[in-house]
Length: 137
View (cartoon, rainbow, N blue to C red):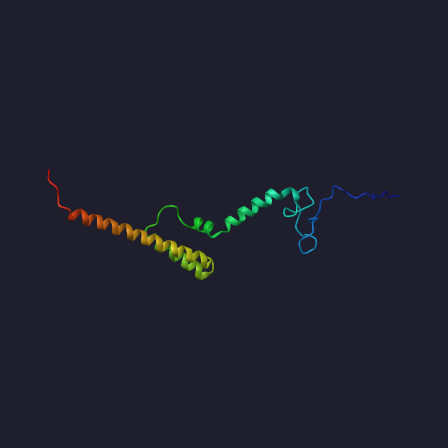
């Protein structure tokens, strides 16, 4: 005669999270190793969830994407023109969000205005220097 075991097998791993989702249905996520809950329902994983959310939010921000795309050194006018062309094509193709393109264009316009301003200041300084009477000792 075959012996039966009516006791539940506590070693059995759960295939799905044992928590209930916000919609009232059982959570369908895979549980964490050795735990009955997924990362999002495990009460012991609160710090890890917070860290993941923080990192995920930053990684998807416009600031982070722009930082990854542009070189760290100042751009020449030719490089700036080239980058704007890349951004423009990316927006048109749908690879870059229009907001990122607008931000890039605004920054590029500011950079170009600063370059012109520095050049004008230098030209004025040169003209003033030429106009001053030369002092003799």
